[in-house]
Length: 326
Image (cartoon, rainbow, N blue to C red):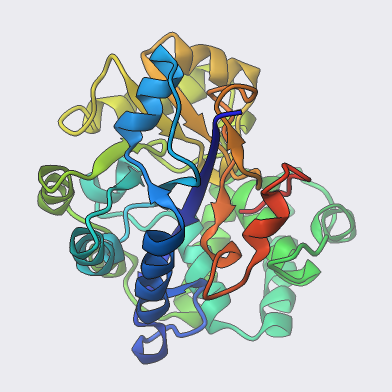
């Protein structure tokens, strides 16, 4: 078996001294300690090495590990890049095209910072009220039906938090959920979405700097949609827009897709394979097997599964189980 551990990061920042200490990320001091752990216990490999094994055969070193970063946050540039260079490691960065082309705050990030700012019960109550206010002109399930379907806790979030996420991510029509997310962002965060987006994401020059310093750049959609939930035409449009704006940073004949929210379907896999994609990353939690796994459905582990946060990664040494994460 050609085993590969793939670590998944989002925010890497000075959490305790930030405006949003409750945001779910990895504090930069713990991030550096984790890189030291990896240096002593794993062989951190590059994306090019992984693709070479997938395309041409061969083997990876024992305890091979690939580092991946989702969403194109400024943390990638200010925190991750200097530390990766310090320890001689490559990171693979997956960036939604909209983040650096439109100065627009993605709904996924509105949700993150709402959850980091609002009391859980008050947020749920506000969401239920806003749903009722907008139900007259649109058809979507009742609050009771939505809650029963989506308020299912996981190892990362309570049932109420999962409910808020799912309703604002995918469970109701896009226009309505975006309006509600903006209303909640205004109430609990209280900043201009446009200004916030300029502070949150990397710009084109910073992404270019990542690439010039040996980092790998891949696709994470354009709008950060649940690709598997879109119509075929909408999925194709989102993917093509992402390819267009990322053209400077990727090989159009051999790029890598990281599915937003880990969401895809057979139509997505078929389409990207025909457009030059060589590998796809999910949010299923397991060690990857480059011989047995579909190259377009490779699982990853969360950064919190590794020391100094935990030893959860040991559970997947034997490919025991898979678990889903946002």
